[in-house]
Length: 269
Image (cartoon, helix red, strand yellow):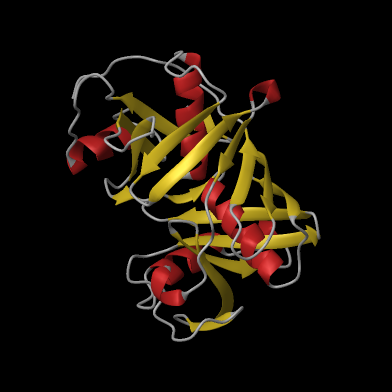
């Protein structure tokens, strides 16, 4: 499956338990020897009351992460197409908390992505007190960035032209920085106007992807927080567009976008 080109191998473990080693996860994600994907999604029963399912997210390097905006839309679409739910919404458990998926017209999916967290310790970001913009020393430069958690850590850099951004150079440097003890997803944001941004994201354990749902949410949130964006923003990613809406402090971020099934099959592990 994919959401705007951010692609996934989705495994249904609702009826039987599935345990995958890091080696097996890396094999599945390998685009030459396995299936090929950015992340592996594992759907399991939830043990929480009034929660429909649990899903886990593993990056291509085999490491587990907390949340994935494009992935959660794919999970919702899978459940809907398989008739595993019979309502217009589904409540999903992740390792970072609960999210709710809503099914909209034209097969679009709207997701309550939760309330963003700016406190550095909670991102986690070892930088001291909370600021709107932080300065960080890299190998050969000083860079300004904004930071937020969308149940996973994000650093966002404002750039003049996203096409010219040094994503593959700066992204790994920020991810490896000591100030981000759990690494970080790095977004490069070009503000077109107050309702439109262009974005590229260098993800933890994956590299640059065609789209990043939580990255889109993070970019819009820090842009609004800095007074540069309105509450409803069209996010133009390499793989397509997402609609992000945030009403401000203490409110949840809403994401609207598609989810596509490419093929289904079986594989020997």
